[in-house]
Image 1 (cartoon, rainbow, N blue to C red):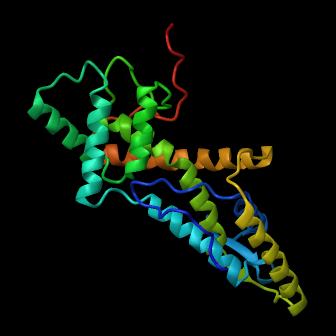
Image 2 (cartoon, one colour):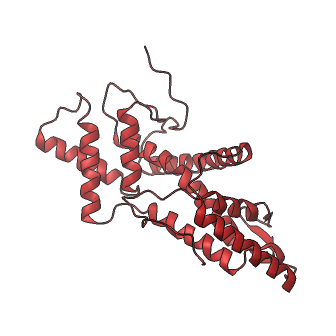
Image 3 (cartoon, helix red, strand yellow):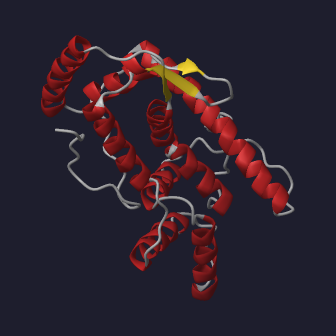
Length: 255
């Protein structure tokens, strides 16, 4: 009654299940009610427009599901799976011709560079490299490097991070001013009952509206800027020169 049903647990190895249309509508409705506070990132919402207890529980359940999916590999089993993915990716390129010991060392170093990335994101990134569908700048004549694999995996994670950011905005908003009347609460509960019924019957969404796409693109641009700033700081701390932005469109393949 108070949670969004999920068919499988979300882990480092398993990507999160897509949100249903009713849940996305629920998040959008509350996001549209948010107002800017007195500092960056500070959001306000009127008490009469804030999520009720059961609505908040559904949003918090979805937040937990997404957060769990972003956890990096922490167990020996997960790290072993990550090593197998990296080895399979590098083995797909003729330039990866190192002997057994050198190969193990290379894979170990790359896995260490991916210690903050979930296994499923690396697996998807590897598939994109093998199909030459990646967005990160890369020379397809050579095996991708650790920074390139990490950058592509981070891009894979963006949709999840954007949805999580939207949830956190709603759940973290400061509740202010008016009180909700009993009639308003009864109407809201009745409306929530209808939404729950739609959630139970809903299939995974296949199409989005133009407004939803525009909003997600704006959120992705902000997320890209945050990641670029974070990576620039990490490279500066490591004494490395600035890197080209991994989010620039990749050049068209040479025919």
